Image 1 (cartoon, rainbow, N blue to C red):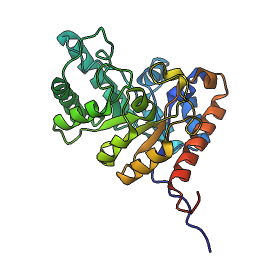
Image 2 (image 1 turned 90 degrees about the horizontal axis):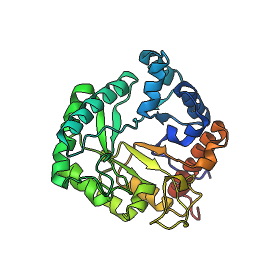
Image 3 (image 1 turned 90 degrees about the vertical axis):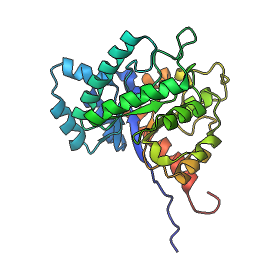
Length: 292
């Protein structure tokens, strides 16, 4: 009798931060991701801009995604949409529009919207209801460009550093396009327990950043470079996968690492291990066979 194989309800994506130490142009980064088994890539806006600066044409880059069978899961940008200063915020909205146009040109439908400019202790931090109004403003930009900004949690941030804050803003925005970009490392860094995710609707999570972290350094001192491959740390990723499955998440798990040790290794090896280890975490968590 054949055993039921483990389910894999999520898509697998490579955030290009994971291999950025290799200095690959975006065209080559796409090849590396596809060769490793990923079905999607989450590029950084600066990589798309660099491609254009070299004379690349965005329709050709879009075709490259298509030829390799890759989705554009989202993109990482840093427009200052949240800040108090009106002139800076106006410039941030214009930057967000330009970034959205770039993402739309390569076939993407989502872009990260982190709390850049209101994340440090010495920066003015607007209240959550005011942030909700500002998030609504960029969601309206998204209606005209076809690219939805995803409200991103940054665990180290003084603003939108906890799950409860991100959920509050996403709900109070009162916009049908409202959605959230969460991250296993950032949930831990900000002190949010993964159990809180069970209260969410997985349909509001188009992308989820997946990574792991060691027990040392402790949470107060841990930083981006300390992230490790999924399954190589102490994060309760099995519980996380089961929770995401239970709430109906069917988006992309995007592997986002900034480990300088990995950056010294061949990008092909890093991408392959990122895919294999993430897939193994999912398969083990959702394997219906007894004892697995």
